Image (tube, rainbow, N blue to C red):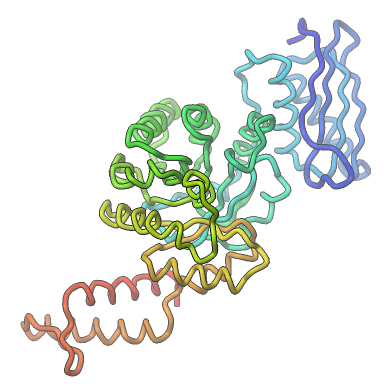
Length: 398
């Protein structure tokens, strides 16, 4: 590294920036390391920041450089990611990774049938959103490397997401990452699979082979790092072709835990406008639900894009629930509680389900093959739905 000349920068700067930082690194032939640090927290943490930057220089074998660092309250894992991003621009052959400590709070696992009512999207290049995301109690957080990240920021986002998986406490939320569209997304996996990601979201899914490719790459990385826990896959259907092939996508891998739909890209593919009423996407949503149910996995609805319309969101979730979806995407923390409340069984649904299950248990105990509630005969699908309602209520802890 010491023999390379050049200047590179990474990060964000400006008055509106918070919980982030900016590096400009200029390599030179001699003179050692010259640091110019501008930090809003310099009085309290200036020496710690200086020490970390010098440690980073040592790790990446940077011996002679002029380094400007502008800090807006960045945590150490963010500083490390931004420095590494700048170094990567100076030398694309570097393979070393500077990994922050993996905190104990992040070593929990997930399950294939985990409750996934809400999943909160967090842009992968905006660390200010990472820190408190878990406090809003979504069922899952999605560290996004795809649509919310500008092309020029994607390499830096991979490092930020990798470090966040290790250093940010998400308070028990399922840890998800949306990778980029294939084939680029396959390279993203090496930045997330070794760091206890639970679910990989695959955007623009259009064939079973894409799912197989992702599964094979996950398996290869797991083997390399001696990982035994399952990493699940959630394909996102976002095109007319994806809708038509939804079932073959849903059954392409035993690691598929859910099938999701993304309506912004889908309606653009159709050449139409997305509406709250959703008439233009009704066929696609039903196809995704049926494909998921036929494959024995969850069906997850798209995001509701108006973060100020809570009543519209509630109506949308109730419609999703009525169609058969089990979860919905969130793009703002304030949407989480509304989604949870709308997906929860109503007291009337719970009471009816209890009566049906009691009637079923009584029929089984008496050896009768007929289940009746009052004068009404109850068939097997109704009993199954009642059990599912009570199972959901139990998962919600009510």
